[in-house]
Image (tube, rainbow, N blue to C red):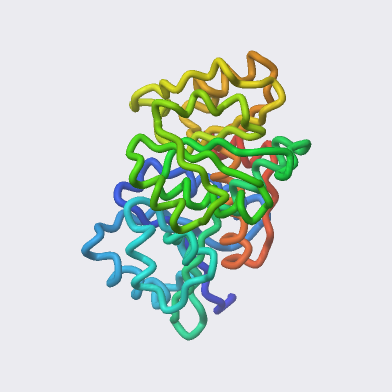
Length: 277
């Protein structure tokens, strides 16, 4: 009988019952025959530090962090990676053998990897990106686009002040556009990205006019409920390459799984099916 501890990981959020991460990681654990478990952990913000500090003692090797804890966890972790610092949020924790906590952010990695897999002809240097939204997901997307070599980003947010803050942090390759004017910039886009929750089931529609969209623009929406949003439907109908938001969720999970369980999982059709189960 083996005396080795079974590695545990999970996703910490409030609420967390809706998370698809347990389906994804559970699928990989089964696929690769790994003796481990991945569980949803509903934790209120006031209990976050106490819970996270206790997890290594319970056999946890790491955890994902979701809303509303992505910023707060940065204050709790013992060490924060450069990319998490740049983005200002963490989504992945690694618990080291000595009990210390490393916080990382893999959202930007997930976004870019999904883009390259789903739109292999996309070249960052081709032209500007137009980005809707200036929330946490947008920060990860923008950081990854700048690192990839996108020459210019037109950023628009319903509250302009937040977009202006991004420009001051990320620099002159960001051009801020008023929300009511952003439709006029779409025809310049080599890449169009919605990072807002607009268009999600139960949320308001994304009402930006898309008439200027060119058929050679790559269009991606971080929303994945529904999988094909109105924006992606419109873009697909005129011949654009479209990239749904589920792939980002799947690819951002890869680095954490590899660190925790020692195997690098593949994002394939079976993984997508498991996430949508």
